[in-house]
Length: 260
Picture (cartoon, rainbow, N blue to C red):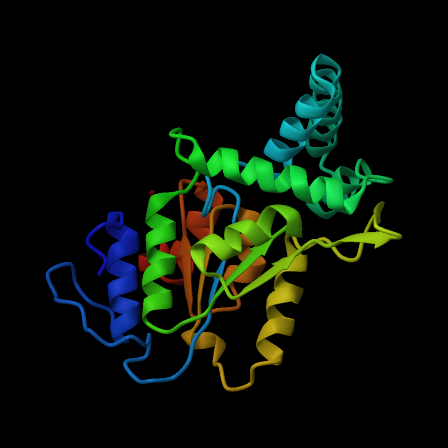
């Protein structure tokens, strides 16, 4: 079940699914539940650079600006990216940057952006450059095969995430949702689902499902900003090489650190 996964991730998922901490030479249990029982559990996953190789919001922004406006769109993307880069360097909260990003959609038609997003997703998934992080996608697929629902948690927005959710079989998307009026984006958002916003979204999702014990649940993330979500579950998995995230999870439980 986990032979295709990177070392730490494979060993951790094997141990978690069997409900025990196993040494590398031990054989995994065939139990579909992390506790070795039939208790239900949920799998939460970040998206950008955890499940897919790109930062969806920025990749799409570049795609749609250039497609619609050519060289002028390229210049506009460069301007927006430079402002965001400066704000990030100055220590602006990621939630503020998330809001700033969506302000650029003010007045845009929801229908038009959704069509462009569908085209973006079709082109990216057809590309040979590698859109998915295979180890994460396969791990999520194995959880689904074991009967667990997969929930995507992201600061990106529905036009980009819903096609992805359909393709991998995710049950729900918890994400930043831009506000709309008369079929157009207002440039405002309800609540950025990033950092502490991820914690709030996951907590609300769990609160509505009292039969699910968070200690049985999994979460996948690649960045320190995913920590508020990862801390809520019994089985957090770090994807990639973020040293701060790996250190936090290693301090909590060494085998939660994974690589891709």
